[in-house]
Length: 330
Image 1 (cartoon, rainbow, N blue to C red):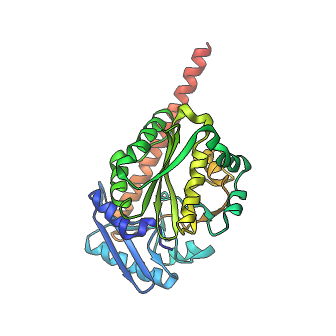
Image 2 (image 1 turned 120 degrees about the vertical axis):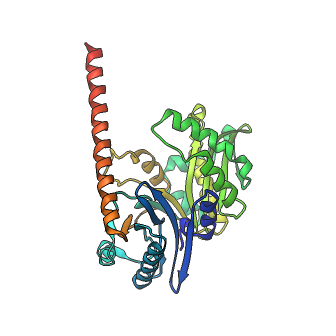
Image 3 (image 1 turned 180 degrees about the horizontal axis):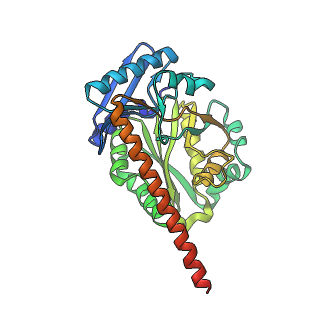
């Protein structure tokens, strides 16, 4: 099961953004790696990769990535293996291959997935009852759903994303990024746009990324003026049932926060994702393989200094707001 981020069509999308992308494969392994630039130089990044059947094949893929990195003078390789059957000993195995835990995860290390191989009734029964009932009855309020593979309709989603990012602590992917995604992935059958309409007018939209066996819940937003309809819920159910009808076996809600961290910034939408049934999946996370050790050490020091500075600025802003609040109370 190869993640969308490790597919050839994703490589095409990345190249359309001007990225340099490398692809390679061998018996039981493959990778897609993107050259990423920093002020300190270049590194190779394999998002949710490399892909490998088992640990020996993963070792070969990592060796190939290291050789590629040396050839292009990259300072390190960043990997996120999710398909190598590493199990509970993932950290020990990756460390044994010279990898170090990255300062932060790039892609989420926790995801929430729903098995679409169950029959439709069981799938709906696994959801929260309010979500199930809303899906079954929303048509009574004049809401309909459409599916599109036409990139020209992407502005419907972009408009909603702009409004959400303006009113909430949320940063959407750039319009340029999403336009290129639609233009490359939709014609290839690797993306679909789902639209909820009220009396013919769009009130919510969501974009999926698809492989032969997995649909990813990628980007979604709704019209705040119609928030009482909760159209995003039946829209998501529609995406799941459309995937099932298309022969897709798994619905990936993408990243969630740990259930025991209620103050996590993702806690709200993580509860939303979990309300549709399914199970949590944990990945090893993001790991780095230093190639040029002195440059990687410089990168780590720079990253640490930046993290400390950001933390200090946040503390200062919080303190300033507290002082202002006390002054207003007089």
